[in-house]
Image (cartoon, rainbow, N blue to C red; front, side):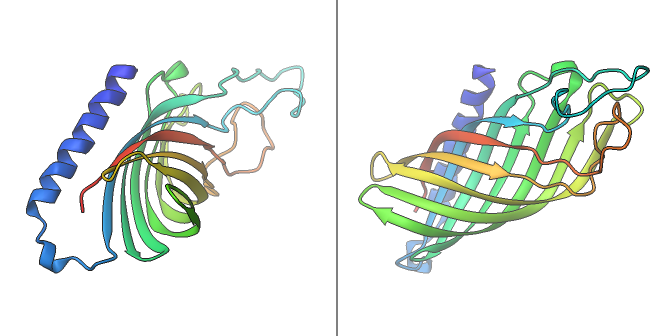
Length: 204
């Protein structure tokens, strides 16, 4: 698990160095900034609801207690002017695969810096994109891809001129994803949510 994360981090930094070498400074606005980062992620998949909230009939099978999915996030953050910017990210919750369950998401959108003081800044964001889920234990479903919209936010701290640490939270909403198939009658829609934490390198 840790080897995968550090490999992704190394790839992100190498990509950032390559991008930096290709960018012409004259073409960049004075307030523009580009960050490339990698983070460790840990999310609740929202797949098996707690049994104390969902009663089971005598002939129903209890779902397994899948509560967390660890993985990695790679993101690109482009600041446009002062407090506004755009962000794109890829998240792969595939480190442990409990029973085969994995979640992947590919998102993009905008953010606003709501607070900044010294080396500390707080951003709020809204992203949209696609979510891919491989289900477990539900062989009759297998996998699915869904539209997802995501409110969230992050807290960043500048470690050095070119480096910052970031803690990020996202609440993903997949309205068309099915509910847990082992409990008939549950409404559709999944809400994976969780935290990511890591570092980013400033390309320019």
